[in-house]
Length: 198
Image (cartoon, rainbow, N blue to C red):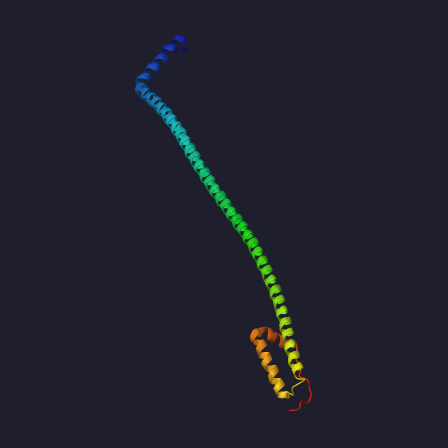
């Protein structure tokens, strides 16, 4: 086989390119156009996806921030409500405590004043009873002495003397029944045990 010169090689290659262009040129251009369209579509899709992801990220961030803000407001509201209720309860307890303390002081003062009045009344009543008893005792002794003095000139039987003393006691008792009852529990008057002629 004879050697091929460079010029001949170029001629042959040129012919091959022409033949290839004739055979595959249209298909190659079609493939090239399809690839270009696919690359363009892929670029558009990539940009659309990126825009969509950006929009979703923005929307999710906004929704999340809104939810966080709403939750914070609810927490603040609940916390404020609890604080208000706690303050109201604390104030109510303080008011009740003050009222109870005031009522206790009033009751103590009232009881103290009442006890003082009762003690004063008892002391006064005791003094009056004591004075009344002394007066009754003095009257009784005076009456007894008066009757016994009258016995010197008259002869009185023991029964008559007892009746006179009983009448005297009933008269005194009519003046102060309670005082006479107290007096009879504290002392006993005995008749003289002697013979009296009828």
